[in-house]
Length: 448
Ligand code: ATP
Image (cartoon, rainbow, N blue to C red; front, side, top):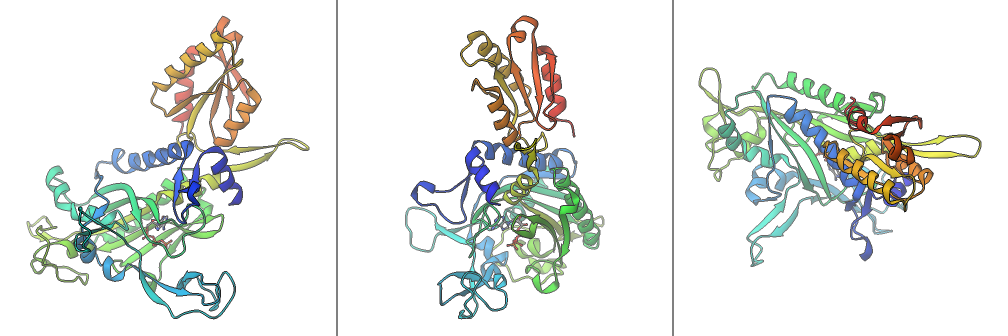
C-alpha cells in the first residue's frame, strides 16, 4: 500500500485533499492521471450497463436530497454505525472494527459502550440557516433512482424487467476513514437498480452477481483475487432480503469491492403514495408525503410494485484494486528493475506518448506535434506529446504510469516517414509507417 500511495502522489494519480492546509481525513483528490483512469473506468461501466444492453437507462440526479427522501428510505433511522471511544488514547472506532474488546491503536480495554452515530452529512439550503430548510448529501446514489422511477418509466415506456444506472458522488461521515481511497467520506458509486417482477428476484440476483464478477475480471482483476461472500442475516441492511458482496484482496486485507443486494419492494414501496393500494411484501413505514405512484402494470393490467436488484460498486475502491493489480516491479538484470503499471489499455490514463528524439529540433518536434494531433482525433483517450529529450527516461516514466505505447519520432521519420513503436509490456520496439499508426493504436487500445 505504501508503494502505491507514493506512486499515486509522485506521478499525479491521487493527492490528499486540502493538503496545503494540513489535509482532511477521508478526502482525496484525483490528479491529472487519476482523473483519466477514473473516467476510463466509469466509461467502461457505463458502456457495459447502458450502451451494450437494451434494458437499462441512465440517470444523473442531484446530490442534495430533501430530508423526506432519506426519512422514507429508512436512512434517518437506521443509517448509523455503532461507535465506541477509547478512553485512554481518545481514538474513535466502529464497534465492528474492535477485536477482543481492545483499542486497535493502543490496546487499552477501557472503551465506552457503543452508541449509534448517523453517517449522513447535512447542509442548509437557502440564505437563512434556521435549521429547518436543510438537505442531506446523499449517502448512496440509489435513492434518487427510486424517486425518479415514474419519470423514467413515463419518458421511456419501459416495462419489467429493466434498470436505471447512475454514477455519482455519495457522502458518508465515516467514523474511521482509512486505507487510502478505500474508506472515504466523499466517494463515487456506480449503481444499477434493476427492477423485476416479484418471484423472479432470486434468479436476477444470481444473474447480476455473475455479470458483475465477469466485469471486474474484464477490468484486469483476476478471478482468483475476488471472492463471493453472502452477508449473514444479522449483517443485512434494513432493506435487504439477500446480499452477496464481491470481496477483493486489497493491500490491507480482503474487503468489499461491490455489493449486490436484493432490495425487494422496500424502496419503491416506501416512497410510493397510496401504499394500501398495493401488495407490498416488505415492512414499510407509512408515507403521507409522496405525491406519486411508483408502480407498473403487470400482464393483467394490475398495478404492482416491482422488486429491485442492486449491484452497487465503489468507483474509488475499483481504482485502488485495479492499481494494486497493475503495479509490478520487474527485475531486469542483476541490479536493475523497472516499475510498470500493467493497466489494460482501455483504462490507461495516457494511450500513447509521442516522443521527439531531440527536444530542440524544430522539424522533429513539429512532426511529433502533428502526429499527436492526428492520433488525438481518434477518440481513444489522451495522447501526450512528451518532449523531454531523453528517450530512456520517457520510457521509464511511461512504464510507471501505464502508457501502453511510446512512439519515437527520429530522423527516419522525416526522411522515410516511419516511427518507432515501443510496447510497454514486452519493451519490444518496431518500426512502422506513420500512416499505419492510427490503425495500430486503435487495435492496441480496443483489443479486448
Ligand atoms: P462497508 O461495509 O465497507 O462500509 P457498505 O456495505 O456500507 O461498505 P454499501 O452501502 O453496500 O457499502 O455501498 C456500496 C459500495 O459503495 C461498496 O461496495 C463500496 O464499494 C462503496 N463504498 C461504500 N462506502 C464507501 C466509503 N466510505 N468509501 C469508499 N467507497 C465506499
